[in-house]
Length: 139
Image 1 (spheres, one colour):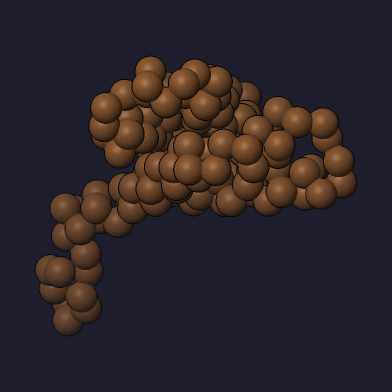
Image 2 (cartoon, rainbow, N blue to C red):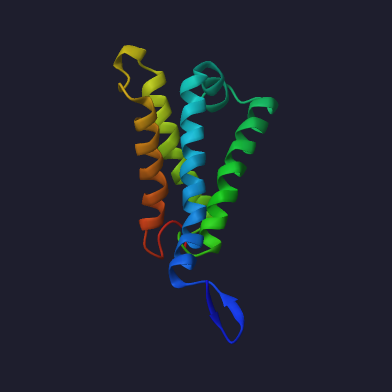
């Protein structure tokens, strides 16, 4: 922190790190989404692709809100631009596709390094959302 007129003020580098924290959180939550789907394929399929019931809708809504809250923080600090709900839907589509592509195949066809796969997809989703120019996805 730099000091100016006796008050502590964050440096530019500290500000950039603070502004990137929500994207890092989005990245981690994206990994958690993928890991859950791959670790619990039956539960995942029940909620994500099974017949909609009050219970599965409640779980799906909670999951969406969990990601949406993080996307909102990214928008609030200005590292992602656009409509929060539209952005969250796009991120969920990316994560859901990554999970679904694997759980519909035998595990012998899965990537050798699942942790790296989850990290790569999470990076694609979070950094891809951050790379969208203003005016895309609803704004």
